[in-house]
Amino acid sequence: DDAAKVVSKISEENRSHMYLEYLPYHTGIATAGIFGAVSFPMVFQKETVLWFNDKFVTAEVPESADLETILEVGSFSWSWMEPIIGQASFIFLVLQFVRSQAINLGLKPYGHKILGVRSKRMCKKYPQYDPIFLEWFSESDALYGKQKN
Image 1 (cartoon, rainbow, N blue to C red):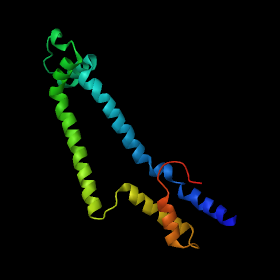
Image 2: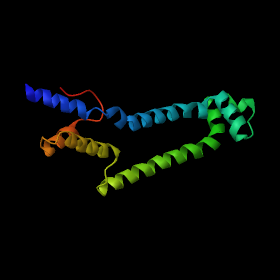
Image 3: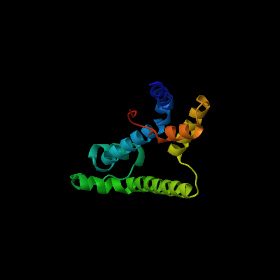
């Protein structure tokens, strides 16, 4: 019974900083979702495309008959949206490649680094317990989700 209380206390401490640890993931998910959602009206929605063109691009607007469908609007907006979307896609491709090569070199990405920092924090907080078991316990606990019972 005492052991269960100790493990529960260690588990709570292990998760005490998680909201900060997974904040970059939440930020990335929200940013990607927003940019993904905004890209559709920026390419296909006539009023948004015309507004953006008027404020930032100043390209010659086709005749009204050439902007009747979303595909015609997309054809017009694509001349300036394609480089932006293409460059953003290339950046993500390069970042994925960099991450893959870093892992091949044994460098830890953010998530693994956080697990390591968290396990070292547990070892400092509970020096009376075996550090190997504390590290295993701490690193086996996910960065996100409900606490295991």
